Length: 136
Image 1 (tube, rainbow, N blue to C red):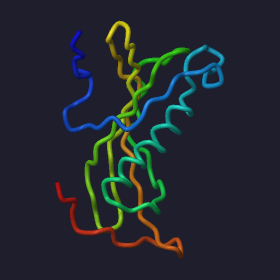
Image 2 (cartoon, rainbow, N blue to C red):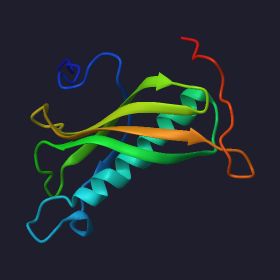
Image 3 (cartoon, rainbow, N blue to C red):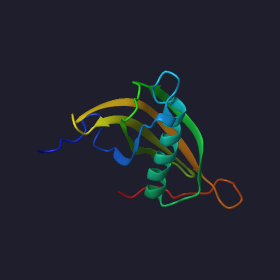
């Protein structure tokens, strides 16, 4: 059986990682807690950005345009996707999204999307220059 590319994710998004929704991730309504999704997105989008710009010491300065689109449920496989939107002198802005994927049915549903900005910092905690552009 051929596996089709996830239709909910644009071509220029990269799969960063996957998580399984466990009971400790649920809120009182038995849906995944929004804070858990934001934590996964912050960490996983950071990993994508860090790998792309080849710089490790970055801090989150904002999470914008956060849209919760559907609930996540116990046992869902949450795939985290990211793409870099803009690189500036000392910051990287990326788009992230979490998709609940069912490997048996080969279906997906987007559950959250957001934009995250990180600033590169030096040993003194002050912003540092990354570079002028990302070479593709």
